[in-house]
Image 1: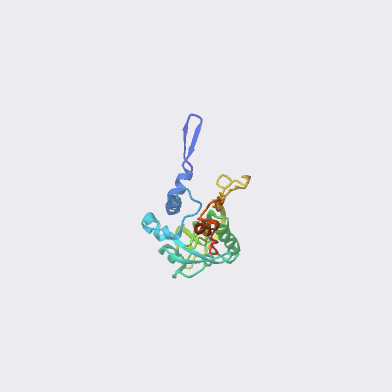
Image 2: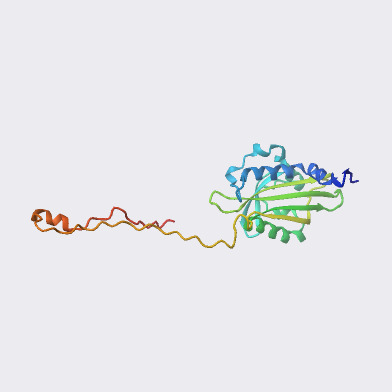
Length: 236
């Protein structure tokens, strides 16, 4: 049942708010990630502090991208272990998906790291023997490694319903994306920036004057070495 409050011509639905309450861990992890990046495109894995999302830790996880479209669990909360009936660390994320949904999940993972983007997926685990239907939300937020590559993912998976017989694997019902490198941040039509480096001053030898002493002539005739040198940095 949907309950709407009417205020003049405005209609306010409670359904989005109920969805946030139902999957509160998803909202907490995403809000923490947004605070962490603080306007930057992507925060670093080293900045993650579990205390910043302590109410959602059992649903949270960190992935490492090890190949195109393949990411394995480095850390995972107990809710994921309960869903699979086993420890998931070291397993690929696609292990929690039905076989027919794994290709799409690989494409989503690649887009999260390469675009980069934040992705929220709506999942469902069908009814079976000893298994009631499960609905779930999956959040994937990109992170940089210590080397600056976007190959880590902060995620959250929260399912609602009785888990029943394990393992529970999911199908993908809906995918929502939010690119992080927008045209507002990086306009494509900006002209290239030209930087004119200042010319190095070069001191020349002073002109000879008549009557200059012979013992001073040798030192005055030689040009002095410029006081600036251009050094090539081959490590850049």
